Amino acid sequence: MADQLSLKDDAPQTYVVKKGDTLWDISAMYLEEPWLWPKLWRWNPEINNPHLIYPGDKLRLTFDDQGQPVLVKDNAQSSGKPEYKWSPQIRKKMKDANPITILPLEELAPLLNYSNVLTKDILADAATVMGADEKYKSHVEGAILYAKGDLQAGKSYAIYKQGEPILDPETGDHLGYYAILAGTAKGLRDGNMANRIPASLMLENSRREIRAGDVILEVNTEQLLPAFYQMRLAEGKDVQAMFIRNHNNVREFGKLEIVLLNKGANANIQQGEIYAINRQSPDVLDTEDGPIYEEDASRWYRLTKGDDSEDRYEMPIENIGQLMVFKVQDKTSFAVVLATKKSVRISDTVTAP
Image 1 (cartoon, rainbow, N blue to C red):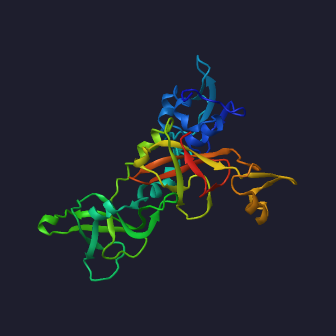
Image 2 (spheres, helix red, strand yellow):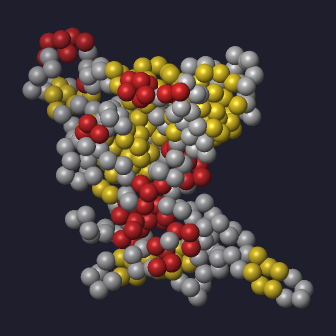
Image 3 (cartoon, rainbow, N blue to C red):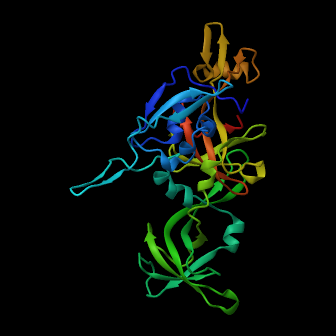
């Protein structure tokens, strides 16, 4: 089933790529399961490389020998590629020359790269800010920071403040602390704690005041990108996770929101996996006056009937969207909401499809 593409009834025969489109958005117009986007583009060497698809290119829907849908680029109609024509009078450059990507990485990259949970193990091993080249209590961009830790010159680092504790909404277990991004820095000189030599860093960007004791973690800005090119359905896994919070800390949220889940490597969750977002429909009580939602029943009715009443009907669980995990830690993981049929709520659950 995972290899079969299910085409939407209203899938267009042709589509002209617009500025702001992504491969995911285009695939979602054609497929019921947009995470299978690589199979939709598989016969198109130019489309296999998303950096070669531009606004203005015309895409055409066709089918292979097994009747499976394939999107191909109609080169005769494509006009979005950047073209340079030289003549004695003028040089022309086509508009909208930026290629499209799988997801809007330009918008998501800061959140993908710097989302973190500070566990006890991370805090025990992490480098920390000791001071700076000027005797200030807080530091701004351009300052040289000194760190307690074996950091290396040339590498990129994120500086975090330890936030509130994170509790598992199911068990109440302590999972770590929220990592509040305070700034980013680049290594200037190696540290050597064995010889009591602190590392030196250049503060490149500061969102908050940088103070002694702030946590420093290495950041590889390229490490997360492969996950977007290896999306796969998390089939056959007995995973049921809950939302802890979302990036904007609101009760309801939508597409492209970054969320924190209460399961991670301990539940065999892996980077790049696609999971379903599910919602329990509200229970119904079949009373003498007709069906009513449980929350609308009188207090007396609830007291006399109890939770095991035969009048109670447990309604189905419905799928309302999908998300993709992009960072996995021991007991938590970060994911990005890829698609939703309605606003996602903190009370919704996450399972393998």
